Image (cartoon, rainbow, N blue to C red; front, side, top):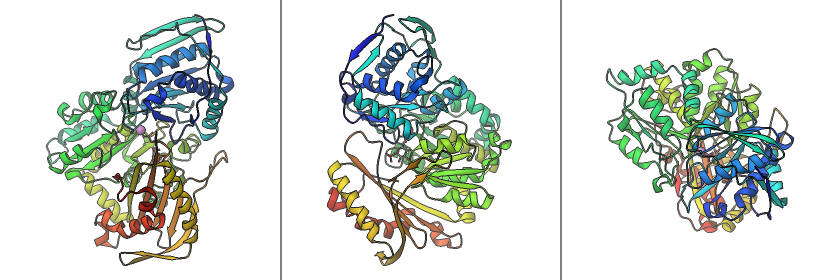
Length: 562
Ligand code: VG1
Ligand code: CO
């Protein structure tokens, strides 16, 4: 097959964000746009190992996935890669890609997703490179990829390498100048399901689902939001664990997620929340577009704050067979995540790490054997079984804990608070704010945050004294790399915090995130069980006043509260 070299010019803005390059679909559809970025990913991501290397390729099934997979196949062939392992129909969840990279011991992977962002012809698309550890590329690699996109003048492609990714099989081509090129189209679900079976005690979970709710069936309502988890959920929860098929919602992946916003939170997974409120089912869970996020709900829609979820799993880690014969030495959370897991680490004499937002910062800690679990407040929970957060894993972890503890979700969380105290948390998102206003807000805010040091700030008759302010900076303890400007922080004398940052996963405009948390001691029984929104109201008002949210953005209220 002939290799064609195509002249191109660079596109502005092909800079990977928190989790890969994410843009509106029409932007990717411009002539050469996707090809340029794929060429840059191969050169910047694989470097001198490019020729002869192997990658896993797949995406969450959103609009443009198949076209992008074909472009990746043809450009990889022309660049001398030796093999691609592609999920059937180009479909793989993000955790499944991470697992395959590790199990097949290949050089990395390319994931086609914009995660929790809406899909369809007018929605979002994204391309992300993962390294040979199975995790998202660290900053120095995404920086290299970005640099190439700014200088690119041509890409190489084999337009005659045509693979029907709908059919599982082995495809071979003889490429001009580099020789054999292989595409293996594989079952999208098998490897991941085997991994889950090796981590958890499936028979025990199955038995618990059969009779765990006072002798009768434990009903778990699962919402895949038409995203990538659907086929994995059907196999694991219906075929293997015996859940009712009718309790598994929206399991058919759709290119536009059925017009919905596939983000598992109280706003976008409201239907699930409403169904749980009726009180007929024992537990609920939802996952995002690419399957790495999870929301866990108890009976009557009892909401498990993701920061708590991580801490609860950490506290009960020995319930999970995978960890029984592993040496657990530490846990990590991203900086905006409430510090509940730190308290568990402290009590158990383990290390706790605080990293910038984004799973890529956990990679070194995991590879270096420093942590067993990690998580983020943004509904991300995971462990060293792969190098991505993992929605289905998180639900299985909860079910395994329930099967051992034989208690409800709510009881487990309330007992956790009674033991450790409660790290009350909320996040306000102001989505799709005009970029100019958002940038001005952050510039103004940095100055007012600095000026607030030592001052007393009050709202609703409650006063907090500012102890410390900064723009979060992280030095990776493994390779010494430094990540700067990861979020403005105001830390009060009682340990309560405000964090402000701009999202790095949006495709257009800006999203401002405000994170608020405060600690309630186990002795304060009334506060321990009060609503997070009520408890945090004064701090939220202080934050909104400090950043002059309404003046800069015109927004009176956030688009999402979690
Ligand atoms: C958001 C979350 C972050 C998460 C990232 C990717 O990033 O805040 O915690 O790691 O999304 O998640 P940002 O920069 O928009 O705040 V996913 O499910 O999109 O891979
Ligand atoms: Co995601």
